[in-house]
Length: 351
Image 1 (tube, helix red, strand yellow):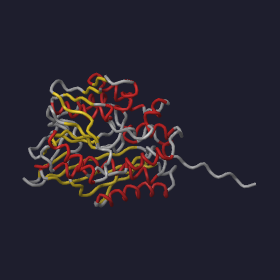
Image 2: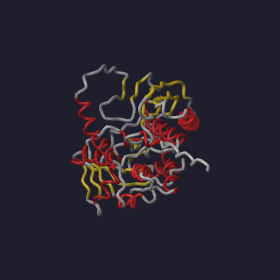
Image 3: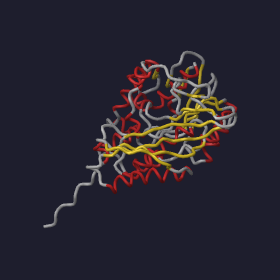
């Protein structure tokens, strides 16, 4: 009698949380940062930690500034190549979210080397390398450690003309909000971990999370784009709330216009959601009001952590056609206007 085939190794079994759902809850993070001591702030540092922006920015001269960011996490999928590709796409996204051009990356690698085959680890790195090749940048170095859980990500370095720098602050009442990718990646990942994600759902998840946010380059050159960020671990509501706080304004979202990945609403109704969604709501829910029908469903979707999510843009109404055209040129066919910035206290209302 032949021996049974070995059970395939699942990367997600090594991780207590996957993708951007691994982020420290926003309320806890705020407590940690609030208690941090003062640090050196040279005049050349254009962007630091003051507005929870996507990257740090350091001015070199009147035409050049360096953009530096890092992101890494545990597996969100079981395929090692896909995991590496998603993590790399997510890290580079923060450069595009500043309106900057990526220059190079450094790999951050933590692996349980006694438990994962070398070939599996190599595939994770190859997935990241494939994305960097599409972005036109090298992985110029990095650091590795032996860790309990698989961890992979990048330090991403970019460059921007200070005149084209975009931040998650500066939105103005009357600005329209545009979202570049559909919501639902966290819900897909929760269903995947339970073996309940269909093949078409997995394909949609990979296509979205490995799509580079290249429209950020064009958006950076548009004076009518007043604020720009990417939607990741804190969900749509959390990252929009950061724009509101940085801009001293409110926002209204028309949930019927928010693009969703296929089938995610049904998955939520079937009980699939990440623990990070609840932690997000606990961290910032006091400043978010859900007035939409089916509020439990809507709350889960707007707090859903988006690994390698879409760009979120606040722009003047006269420029919205140009913003949508920039998304369309790079294949973001589901980019949509989802709401507007309004005068008032920094809060998000979802209708």
